[in-house]
Image (cartoon, rainbow, N blue to C red; front, side, top):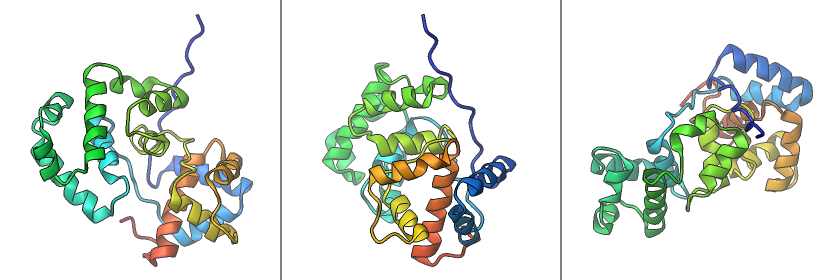
Amino acid sequence: MEEPPPAPAPFRSGESPELSAALAALYLRDPDLKQARAVAGALPDRTRPPGLKTLMKLIVDQQVSLASAAAIWKRVEAGTTPFTPAQFLTLDEAALKAMGLSRPKMRYMRALCSDIHDGTLPLDQLPEMSDGDAMAALTTVKGIGRWTAEVYLLFALNRPDIFPSGDLALQVAAQDLKGLPDRPSEKAMREMAEQWKPHRGVAARLLWRYYGVVRRRADPVSVD
């Protein structure tokens, strides 16, 4: 029986020796990234703890402002004690609506909790899975699409070569950095990122920070 591919070694987020080595390799493949680094400054540590809370928060974060997501998440955390799949599944629609959850997000979060609770999603086994297997396991859950799964792998499992090519901010960052007339499509971003292997996760972190500085005029050395 063929052994499944192993999980990549976790990559420490934020400023680290691993980051410096990965950036040096990226600059050789794409000198534009060196310019992005000069603008972006220090990269923040965006590591999130693996598990139910991070996945639930990613669902809350979908398609709402940061401020709205933070307010909703605060109510979800406070109203789910203990914070377990079984406990969340006991909450009725009125309770979830009072937290600020839309009906689609109620369905998605219930689906996630149900799949974890009955073992359909082996959440504790994801760190040992390959990128492809972990992505496949996550995206079988209703409401968890490719972007959510990729962000979870990148920041909760610290996978080094994940690049969410469908992310709007990454597309805009690439457009600005490369001086492109139009925002690149998801397909174009995926093709562009091929040259950044096996450090696409670092390229993503760098471009997100670059986007934040260029588009919001943030302090380039800030880690907020």
